[in-house]
Length: 288
Image (cartoon, rainbow, N blue to C red; front, side, top):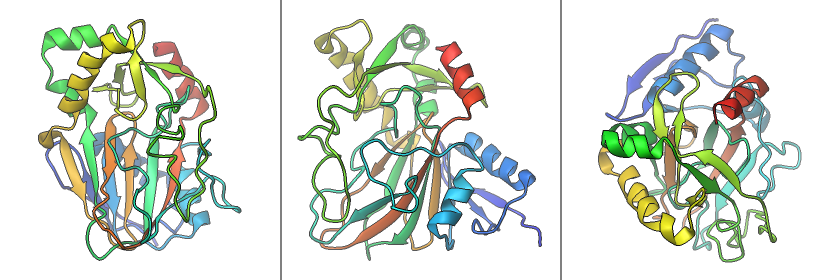
């Protein structure tokens, strides 16, 4: 039985909802290509009413690239690529509760993340997404030219340190603290998307430490300006979760923010993260 997808745009800057697909079933190459096209065009795509086992979620993610194993968050015992993101009613801090781009602290950052909802609160717990391509487009030509000559330093050290947001203790998640020097990696402040050619800003408040070759104090004013600019409401969309919902976003051009506005309620998600195919990683490295 064939599957036919329908794409409905949900906001001006980014975001589309796809219907007509059962992601638990094997997908043809043509359907996978159509999903990839929707992802790169809309930057974040959403699916409803899915029923996925961890194996089915990893099988879906692996159609788009090798799956990442997070260096600080323990995966499932039988599926180390699958992160269980859980906030218990007693937890005060959520995971992902700040604007960021997943895995920018790695030498070869992930291209996408696929988040699946198993249990959601009665209210709250939405996720915000912000298009960094739209943020780049809105800059002046002069600032674009300046930023295209610059790179920035990214690291997990601050976010996953003992005082960092992501390393805070949670009753149902095993998150390791970054112990000592975890590495600093340099990425261009403007990325050219390898599949669309569209440019996007590539800095984020969680993992960008400073501009390469600049002091931290010298970097602060420009980075703070960009961080404020990049979350402007016109560049965003908001997704309200339900059990069985899936969001798939492009980390090369999208920030996201998991809202922590559901005190005393439980939220349980599963995430797989997609790395670039080796040949794509080599092309990106050469471009840098």
